[in-house]
Length: 152
Image (cartoon, rainbow, N blue to C red):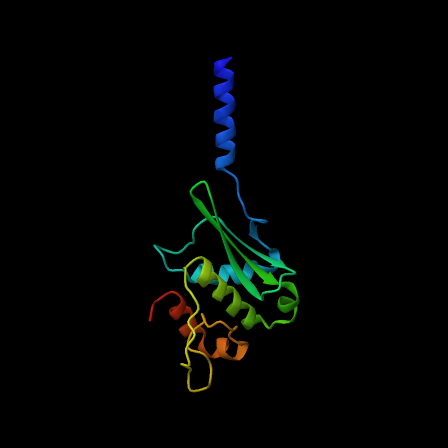
């Protein structure tokens, strides 16, 4: 009897240890190419990112938002992107937003709000609180990638 009770406790604790608190896991098919773009540019020990993240499109109120939650010593993060914004955004603006949220979640970067701009009026950081436009992302893509990953 004691062994069965002990086995039940072990199984219930082990089951809890694998609980994933995210409302979804993986990457929404509409976002895969955008997430891979940033994963491919991650430069840690040959590339790659931590496990335990997700990207999804929702009816949320924020254009993009990074969520964190810990469960049994493991941190999970996921990004939600507002569907109505995504459906009308240009390709490069989408890349900009996914990179910005990747910066929050994966790189623990906060907003970098300053008045610094390039001579063409584009912001000098992908981590500005507002989304970098397609025009600016296209003009300064290499800079934004290097800036995001701290290679400047």
